[in-house]
Length: 303
Image (cartoon, rainbow, N blue to C red; front, side, top):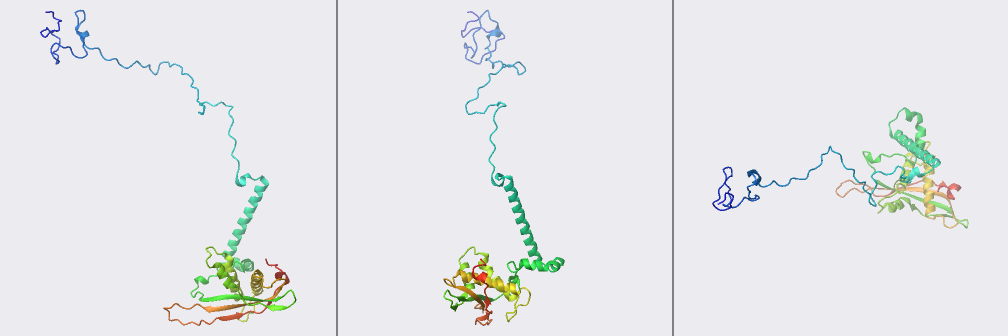
């Protein structure tokens, strides 16, 4: 038999390893050797490797310039591209220069007024000092009567009375007759306006009450002024009464207010049921004299 036969009893060369495969069968991936081919060539060829990649240091081929698609921004915009239009101005910046100057002056005036009012209020409630001694009259003229401060809420003995302010008027009808109206309960009117109102106004809550407190503080038990502010307190209370009567059309068609009179009705707050305190519940009245109404006020000059 030939040495290169593939029979089961074929002779093997001295360098040929014993194959673990079945006798007479070539290993996978190998080809039978021929006489003209050396032993090394009978091994299976290696698998092809990855294709050769060019080195990074070598020259690169120029890339083609990609065309931009519609809707995509250009990588290198031309220097002649138009800038976007500026956004329109809003608010004060949209005004012209004279109007902006006017707004700035108005804001400055409001800021100065607020600072002056806060300073006056602080000096009014502060303990006596050099400024209040030198400018006390100016401070009082600014504070009274609209901005007077009252600290009764923090007093050791808070007010335990209900005070109702009432007014009536003497009018001259269109036919020339004199007539006296009934009593108008101004405090009850404010109470009805406040009751059920989540945001009552400062006027409804404090105007009438502060006016009456101002009058009581500047007058004695005989309703005579005790200081220089007595006339101011009377004028302030009288104007409130005239406005309320005119609102209710107390004079009637063609009528005119000639005089007004105020009175207060004071009743003690009853103690709770568990208290043994005994207080009088009978109302106490305090009537003021008749005050003539100036013609300007009677014709609506205090509106």
